[in-house]
Image 1: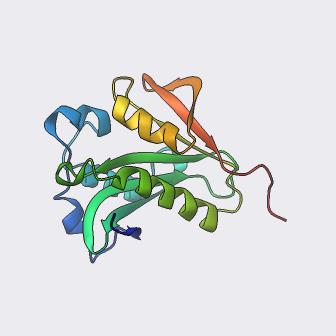
Image 2 (image 1 turned 60 degrees about the vertical axis):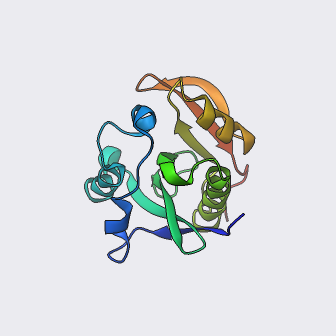
Length: 161
């Protein structure tokens, strides 16, 4: 499999993110609007919920294959969320999703020493995504947000310092 990396969406690659998308029957699982990256970029600017929003392009070698966004509250142990995570429809089924999620978790751990837990929501019918999330350790919490089950991954038990 190709090497997977995450790169901050910037002035150099933001237009390319607008070309990414999922199969039409998957759209309802990811976002209400297209292009999906436009929503991620808008949230980075508007910062809903008082959170910091950081969109990342997912690359397999030098090819952009997907998008993932981190939303967090600085120095919080539990307010770290995955949003708008998807692999472009042309690149699905190659293992990029799981590898990108693992890379994302490593990035959060490296840059956010206060983070103890990462959360996400997943459409209740999106079995494929649920399988990817549980394969890297996310577990349902029993909570819901916007009619979707919340999954959480415990990443560390201690606070820095």
